[in-house]
Image 1 (cartoon, rainbow, N blue to C red):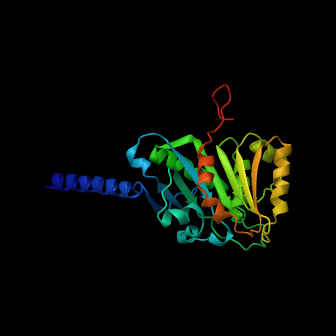
Image 2 (cartoon, rainbow, N blue to C red):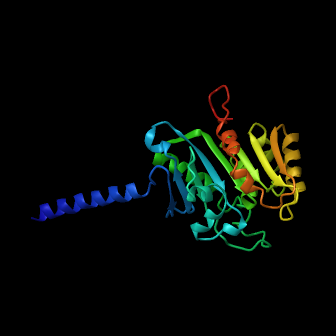
Length: 267
């Protein structure tokens, strides 16, 4: 009887483990909250496209970085803008989406707050860690089609993360942000030298001035980058709604693959 009971417990445990494992992954066309316990990760939204169930091919990934107002420990705040908002309202995309939430450990005026601007000593590496975690867990991510975009603070974060992890992304789309606070200008230029970039800004933005992103783009172009830059006339800080509602934006993003050197390694 003891052996039978022990076997039953083992089988029950295995069943529960399989249920938990299955529950961690969203259904195709659905989005779920992921609150990892690992210290090298932060909470995030995960969306799997309908194609996940229909095909076995590798899928592209779009990493979305939110703005200042969405920091904290409530993932629902991340749903107010961008792809997460659209998905929550029923839009379907042909890519996996990862939308992490930046913690809030300080106010805007506190430049030592590691969460502000997706600080490199804060959650910057954790964003990349999430993608790598899901690459191993899902087994469906195309390493040559990982894209990053973000708005406002997330625009700053896009510049920051690309400069911190060069050769990792296939394309980047910073919206109403800039990279002027990144100290290593040479590293910033090198990271963007061969990366497809489509940047956006409103010419009446009083929160992040147009001239600030223009300064970053000028620096990157001096380093060899070719950047597509869209300036919306008469638009203030919200240059993201129009961008993320544009189907051509996603066509452009998904049209790129990470470049490789002749030896086969990523550039």
